[in-house]
Image: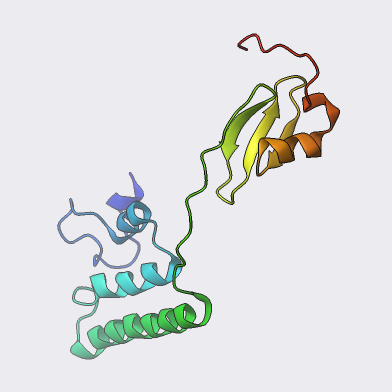
Length: 143
């Protein structure tokens, strides 16, 4: 039996049987912890508790998490700054690009010896690796 087919304590997550549960949505949308908590309380407040007072507490909990989320945003988040998109990683006769790290550096592999280097350009990779990747008469035979 899958986790979605069972529930520990209560039935407030399994109202219709076929709808997505809260944790399915969290995975689908890759929510951060604050988004997870806020939406959890908003999705269940009508169904979990028997009294209006208890239901109101879930709405208040959602509001409390939202208040903290706004505080965190104001303290740590800065408005996005326009940036120029990085040039796509380029291979050359000495270096094969194996991947992009997302911080303007690439994962380069030396076509001669197989050494791996993290660098922002083929020139930087060559400087970090040494003479092996410098022009040395090596002929790339389409490996």
